[in-house]
Length: 269
Image (cartoon, rainbow, N blue to C red; front, side, top):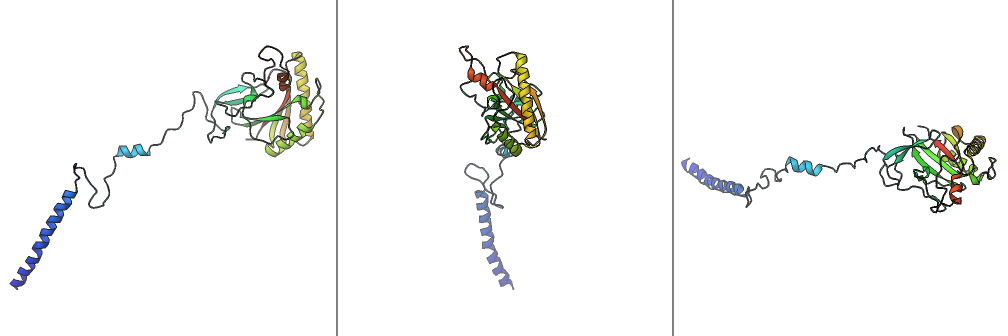
């Protein structure tokens, strides 16, 4: 039996020497030339990055801050994918108070070389709506409470003769009713009459009220879909554009632009 035990020992010694050599090689491989730890011999993965590095790479850019005094936007007026914040509210008379965007990238431009008055209602943006057959435009805004408001504005000269409150052509009103019933049904409508600044203030107020009442009656008798329709005359107190040219002369185009009727449509909440 002793020769057999010597044979077993002879087989184990080379194996033990080989194991020592393999362990030494592993220890040497555990450091690179600069002494930094290499991949773990157990997992084969690199050492984890520090907590600070991980937090830094995961951090996102902070959201853009609002301008001083601004409120978060409710609508994307300019179509850039971001809701446009509002920086102020403005009273346009007869209970029409609206939020004003900080920047109006798609404001309406005045027509016929006229110039907007300061803080004109017409500077507000408008939706892309088919107004075929309507001699006017549509503006879009929100009340301070967030109620959506659309304002259809069209020239009085397309409806009335000078100094008259009797409707001539009804094309504009008929087509406006179609737009309201299709896009803005069941809201409240305030009809607002406006004149230019020629004539007396009292005469302008009376004429604008009569025209607003005439339009209100036409809307309600020709199937406009609304929860209520009211009328108010504002005379020449809310102009959209200047009625004088830069040289001080009268602007015929400006006066014509200010002679208008507005339909303020407040949508249901």
